[in-house]
Length: 371
Image (tube, rainbow, N blue to C red; front, side):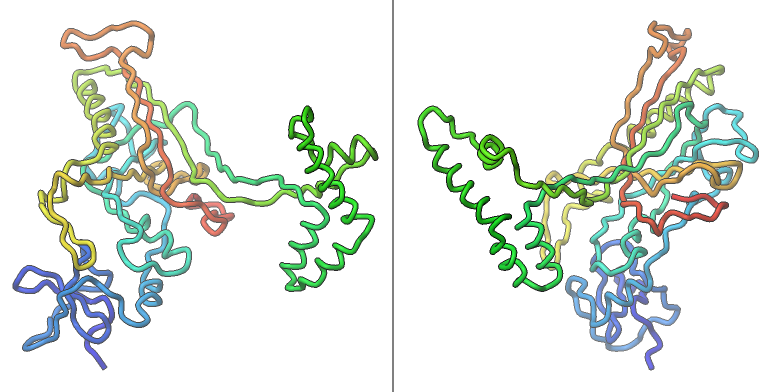
């Protein structure tokens, strides 16, 4: 039995990271660290190192799925123990309701082979890691949550409805029986042929439909058999508006920092990470940092009540910052203090959730909050 399990890793003397693929050690080329644990006793002596792009071993997907991190509700770090810009300056995290904004690097959802299950789908959001300074702001005055789902009304003729039902049941023969129904479909097909002929007659205009013919001659139209069908869920979007009025010079500078923290997080970075000049896709190197920009940071915000997630307000998974709007004249008049700091600043920030919301994400039991 091997001393190492799938995903274990160590950092060699050459500075490279190696992971155990279940049978041998390979160089890890995906960036970051593998999903296993760091070994305390690296292999010694000669060993087979395959210097190539990461290719999962047999059964890797199952193991990755099992190792996927469950998405939890609440901040990644404790608000009072992490550097943060806060407005107002005297906000009390222990006994206040507020929003705690954390910023972190975008985790590519397909950086490794996709597994199965809800945890695997949420994994890139669940492994969100905070970087930089956070932001604490009071609850906005207009706060709500909306879910949108697409349903479509579609119409089916008798032939179409029967064909779909037969296809779903695996009995295509029923379609033929429906076509033999003289009263339902043969006359409809004849009407369709007549319609094609009439649309070629000069002066008709080419816009006569089957229902125009049957409706104007027999007073009937085809039964639309309308049904409402589910199409797809939509990613949730939400926006906040904060009006900030500085009462001290310190608060004015804090407001400036808050505004530019959101603006910076919402903007891409130029070039490759860590000033690199090449990026690897599979076993190919692509050079030229000027050819790439880095995806902007994501924001994980939590509605807080004291030190805990607010139990009454719907929470969100990590979000992309889609809009940052700053109004330096929210009262309709340009006015500043002696040093030029605006009398008031209105900040509007829009977000789009990076993961779909599923029924399993919504908790019916009160306490601890829910998505």
